[in-house]
Amino acid sequence: MNVVIACLCAVLLVSCGTGSNAGDDQPLSGGITIIDSSALNAADIPDAVRAEIREMDVYFEHASVGSNISDGIDALVAESGGRFAIGRSGWSSDGSEVSQDMIDWYTEHDGFGDNARGNPGFASKIAGFESRMRTEGFADVLDVASWKFCYIDNDYAGSAQDAFDAVRVSTEALEEDFPDITFVWWTMPICTGGDSSRDDYNELVRAYCVQTGRYLIDIADIECHDPAGNRLVDDEMRELLYSGYTDDGGHLNESGAERLALAWWVALARIRGWQ
Image (cartoon, rainbow, N blue to C red):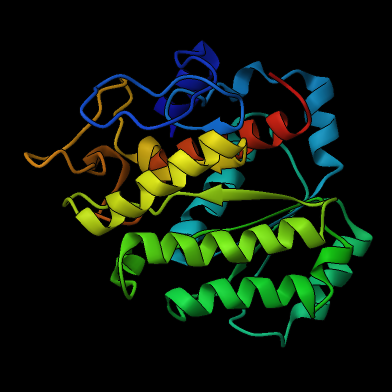
């Protein structure tokens, strides 16, 4: 963790990124809505913007890798002397039984809440998030809402285009119906072994978010770049999770988790207008 904080304080990583860099060992670069391996400069966020972020109501729905990221957010708070302090609450639910507790928390607090809803399956993750927004009252209390797949969701039915279209249709409908909420996209996390189904889905997500200006936390790009900025791929150019960010080949260790915690802070700062 100290290495991550040292990199943070030294601001070794440059800001902003967009798009895909297949076949290229350079970080992505471009628009402010894309948060990738070249956009982890959370140390540059002004104190005034940090204060604005703390007043936001942010909801993050996930499984085990997301829990790693939430732990990284807490670790960043502890190691930064409060500079990255933010109101936090966490829940664990694959249904609606604690939904009212979540809504009550946002009514009474500002900050970052995460729901470890587990792994009910590719289609159920899409439908469950949409249900929480539409029928369980979440849309009434949030400024930012986001959910992510886990690396095991590469078993989606049909083609990568079919999988992407299912997410796009659901998210676009939510964006239209709840224009006051910013919905943040994610690529699918990767592992230390390459996988074409993940890469194919991720390329579609990247292209869409670049073309349409959606906010994207490109976890796959962050995971496949080592701290020096080298992009790791196999012989088939499939992205590989850098071994220094994981202890088991898929989940994030402390170093990897804090990199994604930095990505969350940059994403929220960009949403607040920081460039």
